[in-house]
Image (cartoon, rainbow, N blue to C red):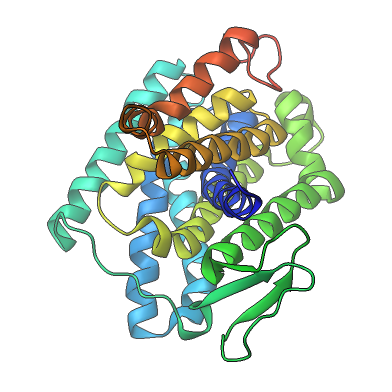
Length: 324
């Protein structure tokens, strides 16, 4: 594989990993703080994508960037106060059944309202176009529009969609912001202390229940960001939530239940595995090998999960006793 193709597959892997990470971060944040396995988190992504379409059509995409995460934060609070808090002390199997049932209800409701087919999610004018990467010394025609970035190793020049590159950048900002919030703020300190000993924190006069509700809303808001920026890439349909829930939950398991760092590393790992398998399948000339790689790209995320869990049963950064 030449460097140009390798570089594009690498960017595609980062873009896939960015979507997985935004969804999986909410999943692992909820499990790490509340001990709840939330199988309705994919439905939150789906709600965000539909809301982003409606708001961008009526008010403009810029409004959707701010309104949708705030809306999903409120949805998360309502979900936590109305349903999830009653299952904190219940077995994980009960949590899975209830939240998965909720996800199915939401999916069917959206089918009834919007129909079962994909609905178009147009990119804003400022988000369309390509980013041009060019090698050192390459001559790029002035007539080619778009952002230009020099990249050593590139032969001539190559293109990558601007929106997908923006998605990678937004995901990095969200991950960094979440890390700063949890590590360097009073709220993060209380949340981390509550994860270890909620009774002791309550005895200090801190409303742990309120803080945990905010955590659930924050996880939903991250799904809102994923819906706004990932919706134009993944398409918007009633089945998109479940379609991305499964690999995102695998990201959580591979990274280690409750580990934010593990979720980030696993998301990039699965994104790269999917992108490079698809890339090799496109380049394959032999019909047998092409067919094999085409079939492999459908199951590669599960194969990665099997290999990692055989070597590290608790995941890459999992801790003893978590979800055992």
